[in-house]
Length: 141
Image 1 (cartoon, rainbow, N blue to C red):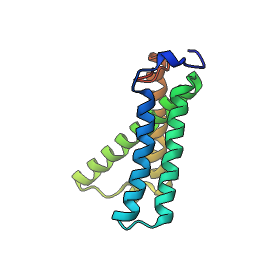
Image 2 (image 1 turned 90 degrees about the horizontal axis):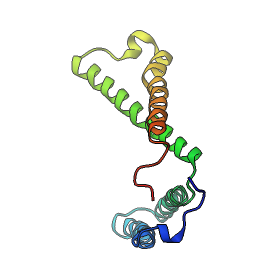
Image 3 (image 1 turned 135 degrees about the vertical axis):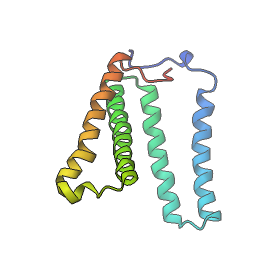
């Protein structure tokens, strides 16, 4: 992967996409303030955090890097698998009427088994998927 993409390699919708994204963020912040009774400080903070996230996304799209792509695969693997395993196990416990695991295992063991372990497993799964795809993100330009 090269470190810099050329201007000719981007599709025609590339620049309008980012402009519309920024404009919609500003409009959403204004709508929250004027229409939804959100305080000005919260509206500004929300717009600022969204601009930060957009900036990170733009950087990821512009500066192609295997290290950054690997980190993204690991983060999405950890969060996605952790989410699925945690809520799947919580649903099974709820559906069967069993007492919560803290009843039998203790608080810290439950945290380790249901929160930390699924995220570690998911990180390895995300890295494995990324390795199979040569750490190329989906929809990369």
